[in-house]
Image (cartoon, rainbow over all chains, first blue to last red; front, side, top):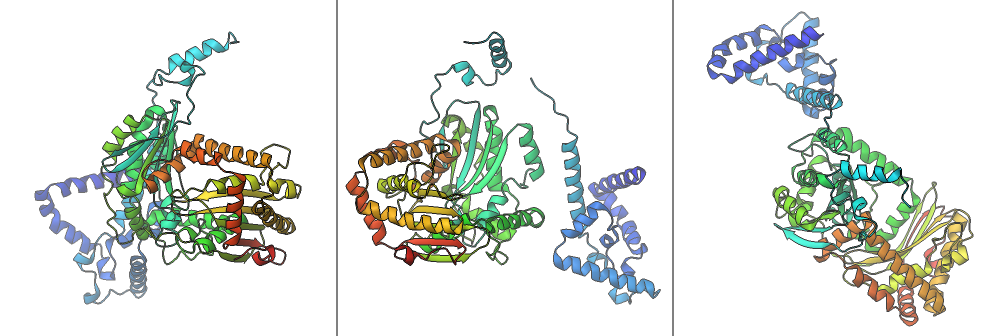
Length: 132
Length: 457
């Protein structure tokens, strides 16, 4: 578990490093577009954030904070994708998720909750230094 | 005599805490009591009142015109109260609570019919931190959707349940609602039968906050800090609060009008009757009402005795009955209330006796000793309230909000001494001539109608 978290954090830091440098960002843009297409979720009509594991504590909590409309649309996309998967089919090409539709709608909430959890943990394990 | 072991300990304490140079320990017994009056100053459009009792702790509060009489939609005062000390632009709600815990402070919020009080108590030296915190709470709270859904909603529904099973609170609300209809008549306690669903959400609360926390609608009250020091920090930390309300949901500022009437509600949890008449307000104080409340009384001031006020003598022996008589003042209206709570039969008997007592006063059957006693009691009540921290801060803050300056206790005491038997008689006659407001909650089969009691409604 800890190695997974460490790897995630490393990936996060690399991604942020790339985001900060416009030159690097434009260099990596085709690669990310290719990766986004290659994961295959768009062909099933899903968004990238639909792939986040619901069982994770932070994601489960973030899902309760989604606006009703977004939560409904998410369930619709997932059920449609499951149906496609059962039938061993892809969606018709016009129903694929377009790259501009594949926006992070859930991960900002997950990040917010992770920050809250980290803060709670930091406050729980705080050491008080007396000045006098 | 100072024992040998205790003196070095006191000296040690004084040495160990150089941060509090004015601890009462060092000042000896001749401390001036905290009954001094509040000093008023205007800091950049915010009214600040403070008094310094030179104790080791300070209590600081923001009193806002956001009580239930000002709420434009039901439940907003309770919602705003619950949103105090939640996540702001600068820090999370959790951090606020933990930081305050580390400093040993206490945070609280509550509301009355007229005022909303966001308060903090802390060690004297932490004043700047708490002034900053309160400034942040009133101007930078985020009113987030998830906090409303995860915390506030649950908290309010618990509160609604508690209030719904409290007949005494319901009866007082019922009496207020027939007395004033809107404004002061809107229920102080949010009960589960109040439909809040269409009105109460985080965005309506945020809009209400925009109006309620505008600079002209707040007063900052401090007890235990010097006026100069509080003003200095307020100037720095309350810059961000808006000068005038900028939101579409304004305060409901319609003036109060007395109607009177009767309201009866069935309830299984207990019995309570409130008999109320128009009373004294900040603007037009009527000392007779306060003396009448002390005279009719009903609550014992001596342990293991039922007391010696008019009602105590007649109904003091009834088991389980609690009587409280009060003269409640608001900015532009007031109520003289007698609240009777207990078993249905006892409450019925007490209600009859209450009307009899008022009629006896109206006929002038009050002995001289009783009047003297009542005046002394009324004076004591006012003075005691002005010494206590909570009551005095609320009263001073509320009167500053509504009249522009804190109430002078001396001014409130003097008229009480001039009450004579004739004036009292006239006042009681006046009350009985007008319409009463009666709120009845409980076993309606037993509890009497106002008309049966001989009151006009």
